[in-house]
Image 1 (cartoon, rainbow, N blue to C red):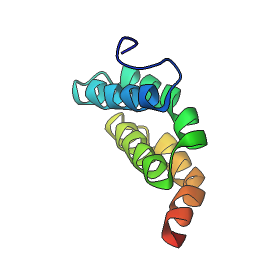
Image 2: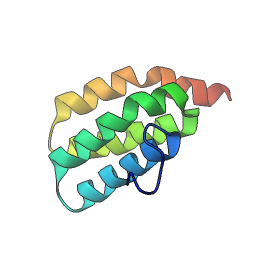
Image 3: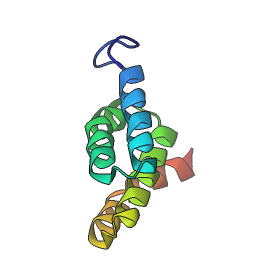
Length: 89
């Protein structure tokens, strides 16, 4: 990943997110969640509303696949601002 993008760039964050999706699909749920969470702060700070919302959906799906309903519910509660902002755009 480092050879393809500048460390800390938005492209690097999106590649980390993409890698999280790959890990999720391969069944490496903890690794996928770690990648999602490591990308989330930067995406939340610099991303548009659509990227932020799509990342939240990917994280929620992973929580549900882990059968972690509490984390999925907490994520849903914390995401109202992101989704509400999209509705106003």
